[in-house]
Image (cartoon, rainbow, N blue to C red):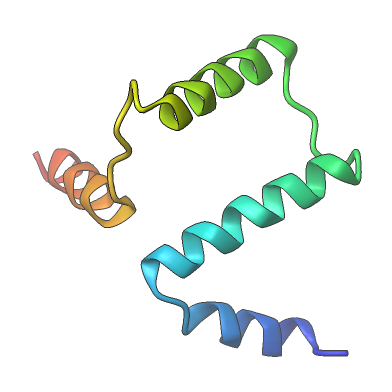
Length: 76
């Protein structure tokens, strides 16, 4: 079994896309473990957004673009 430090080091080597997949997996894993609870309204909103993404109604924005825009907003 890997230590927390080994897992952290491995996660830091992931590409943005790989990290996103890992983060999504971890959220789903936590939800399945019943340790991650969302308010029902947030859960419904999340499901609506997932459905829109899967149906092609909404296009995702790359995390690095979102972070760059957030940093730019914070600098103002």
